[in-house]
Image 1: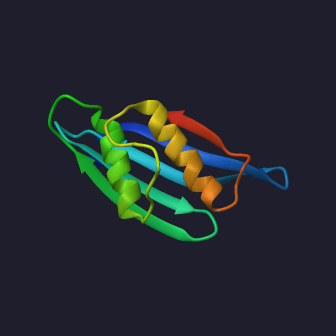
Image 2: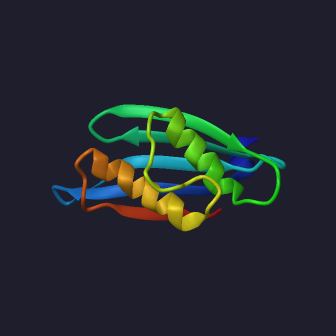
Image 3: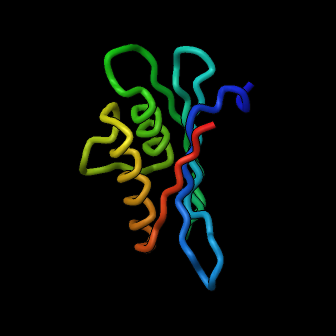
Length: 111
């Protein structure tokens, strides 16, 4: 079911020794009315988290992502939850910077 319900994906990569290295992998699923997010951080430490968001009247994708990142142990000075796509990309880059990676490229995947 998850494969068919994939709604968005994000990968944060950096280039090391001429090769692309994945720092963060984030997937967002929408099987019905609730967004589910799963994140795997593969920087200096390996952590993961999951989150979800449902209801109406706000950007549920970014809320699910914020929930997953919080589940993985991250918090942010700027709001991520419910405020849109740009906040998701900024949060992904912030996680990578926290682990010392400054040259980060975020790739968005939409099935």
